[in-house]
Length: 115
Image (tube, rainbow, N blue to C red; front, side, top):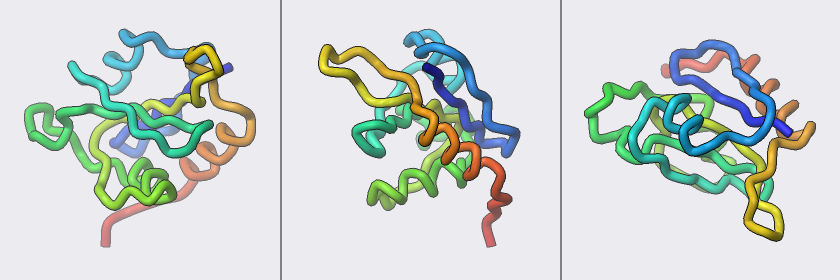
């Protein structure tokens, strides 16, 4: 079981073992309030709830925005994001499966820029 952090600065995808605590989410995203953005039942994206308010000078996260678009989300994503698996039948957070992690690594290898 693992979770992944996709930073808005374009640095490499960070993969951490286990499931993130709420404190881990605050730390990696760099925020005070997290927001859950469900991409699919097996892929959840955690973002800064206040990221677009300008208080934290969050930069657009182009790769996270591409992931959000696959779920039909038409808004852009800012700042660092954390990806986890969905929840099990008891509501407990699951880690990313190998296929999801491989897809995120493939996305991370792309060079994305604004034209």
